[in-house]
Image (cartoon, rainbow, N blue to C red; front, side):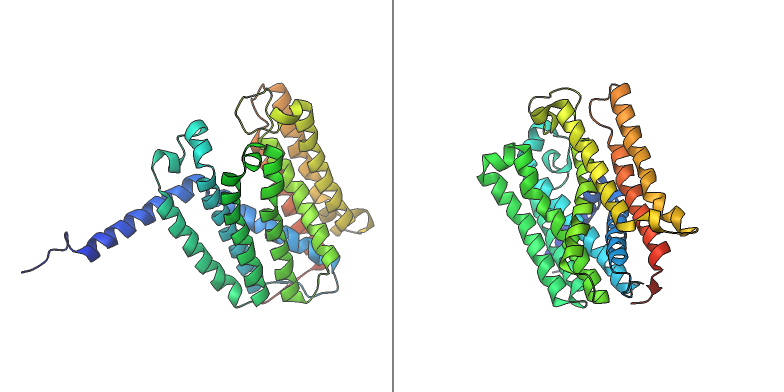
Length: 323
């Protein structure tokens, strides 16, 4: 007797895998669009490695395979964070964002965990050929991200108090900045710990501007995860603006454009123009009666500042092309 393809277990499994792949593709297109996540990963790595190159100008910084591999590593780590956050926030999303993929049933937890496993395999491939240290640090980072799920379920304080949650969850981002520094050090042999700290602080200030901006509301919204619900509108705006200015001050302190000469000076001052996005966001928030600080200008500030740092590093350091 012949078994038809429609009833064969292998055929059914193949169709199920194909359906899961389509669902995952749709999930990432909705919750982690490439135009945002890829651009962020590219600019983050280029800006931080550019910062490290400016701090260690005597070293041979190259735009090559190692840099591309690090960008891919950070991009996949960001996807991993997105997948974990989707599971971690499920109960909150069922109440406040039921249209998101997981609560509405467009994806399930099993499929998200398969995606996590595939990402880990890809990350091992991207870091294994470069350095065991990069592998170990990345696995530590991904493990910490997973630990956050259990921590939020165990602790109501971590889950419900937004500043405590930020204090606990931001180290996942900071550890990625350290990974970028380790990648730079492996590729160039440079980069003392003080450079890593300064670079991480710079990235923290820039990212925190976006973090506080997108969760700053004009009014108190009961149950919403807004920093302004806790510290008030003025306090949240002060954090938003203060982080942007702190990030800018650190950038200018690294580049020191007032000490440059000729056309390089223009590249050195380029990051300062990112303040236009800060001004635009503040103006829209105060004059247009928007319920929250507009995320577009906040992301624009981050992207343009990072781009400016990389351009300045290119102009000042003039890296080589290679591995």
